[in-house]
Each structure stands twice: as structure tokens, then as C-alpha cells.
Length: 93
Image (cartoon, rainbow, N blue to C red; front, side):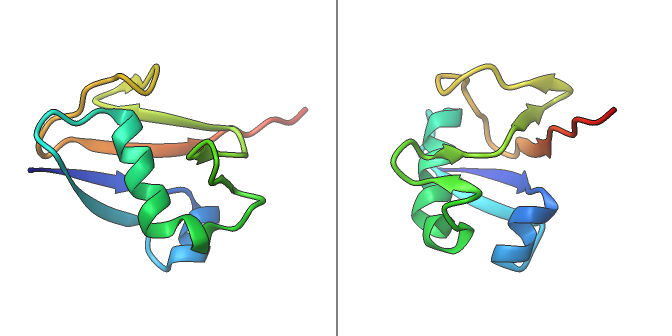
């Protein structure tokens, strides 16, 4: 098992009550598995406007980053103690 530390955006914090959550994943975990765990733990709490339960992903524009880089896809491997941050995309003019 590995521990992944997740910092969530304020929209998600409002629904789950915290902005930092730890997830225990299997030793060869990847970003897609993290999204599955987020769905299993918080899917019902996030609401349909924020979270797509069928696709296990955000409905709003969110960038996932870790170690100073954008996480490119579900197959991106994660390692013990790694931090993942979800950053909302802000568009304006």
C-alpha cells in the first residue's frame, strides 16, 4: 500500500469538509486508480455539477499536478508519499 496526499479545490472542499485528503492505494497505483478512490469515497458528496460518477472525473475544468508537472492521463504512475493537487482552471477577460 502507498499513501497519496491530495489537495482539493475550494469547490470540492465545500462538499467534503477539508482541503487535504490522504488515500491508501495499491503499491503499483496510477492516477486513474486515485480517481476511482475519490469516486468511491466522495462521489456521492461531490454532486453532479462537480463530479461525473460514470467517468470518475471532474465535470469542471481541473488540472491535476504533482511534483511541478501536469498529470497527463490515467496511466500516470503514483508513488508512496506523492502529493497531487487539483487546480481549477480560471478563465476570464
